[in-house]
Image (cartoon, rainbow, N blue to C red; front, side, top):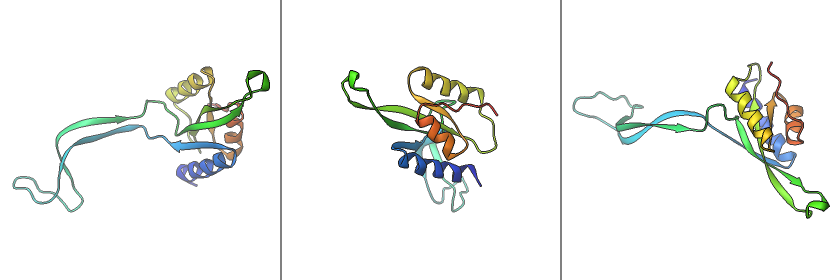
Length: 138
């Protein structure tokens, strides 16, 4: 099974558990004015795009988890009885190990009161959303 398939399964499981998790892309691409079609000095193929005045566009933060969103948490009666959304982050790993930056992101989210961890299965995700962080290095 590909990691993308696991990610989709975990998103469905999160919804069943009352959470909402979205794909968080991290990377770099190019933006600028695009030109399609024939040009006098440049040869473009049918699927090529020329970007004029190109500049880099960075998305996300290095180490940011694959899935992010929130899980609703009911506050106890001595805390007014409100329900709050708590940030939730799941780093999806099938056979790979998390990077140092990914582990630092998970630690930062948990330290700030969020819920974050490494999800290799639906059970791992349920533990993360319940506040039982899963951040095994292997």
